[in-house]
Image (tube, rainbow, N blue to C red; front, side, top):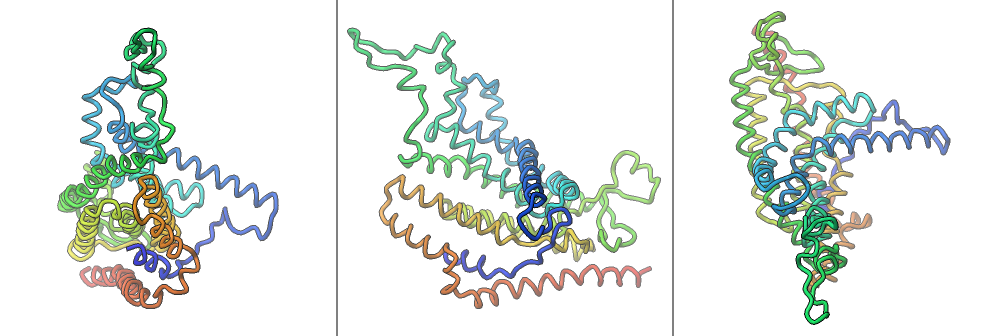
Length: 408
């Protein structure tokens, strides 16, 4: 599997590089160049803060898995159970409604490619922030959950409840033996298992929601929507929820919004990229996730075909959507991160064959592996059919526009 994914990523055709007007090449090492790089860093840092705020459902899910019922964080047991049940659905709904809109607006303000912002948003909300929270709070990792336990609060009356002394000989000290953070979390093999065990249900629930709940919502909205009268050259031709001409009473109530935005390339390409990321990062630990990824991708393809061919949605051909595509650098990062987690788990658990796994990863992941990987064959098998499909999809709006004109 490692060789397969590495070959697919290495054989990926180079995408068109769109130079930003704000962050173009300065042609050398100058103060202006340093200023722009620092500004770009701050812009990304601000984006990470925005993403963290909208990733609260997944963050709270990790909290719910790590915190005990009796804690001082203000989250009681009933709220923890509610968060645990609803977080996957809320994450998918936020992804459907807000991610692309926020990313597009932020892209216009900063000049960063919108599809990269969408991928980063989904990376943080899907597993990166929950993983970090698990590492910090889980009992099998750093055990930071003890900060919210009343027994470990120095001013609490229960702070010495587990102290045990026999004949002036201290047997158990609450602070030293229970409340101190773990110092061997990275080397005892428990933390990597906790990460996989805590996040797997969340990822499976998200994929199942993508496979069943999202299609029902979209199809219901599309049945209650109508196609725009004419196609806007750059924005395409979309479905609008009970949309009518200007001045229609329903538009005064806030309806009339587009309901087929999930079909545009800016939505589709980052979604396919994140599915490939899940395959590379998580399926070596949880093979069952591959069925969830297959289900989500298959349903997404069927919904796309229904939207384009049955509901006659025409895709936009503006610059933002033309530039959207699979990100080789993003997938390479996901593969390196997944290999690093595998190696950490193997060495911390003293697994047999860990040195063989290390050698194999070094041979396959390194840049010179392209010399012996079957890249040309992979291009013919994977990327040439995809390029033909993309050309066909690009022609769909033109064919649809000609059909509409003939009907008129």
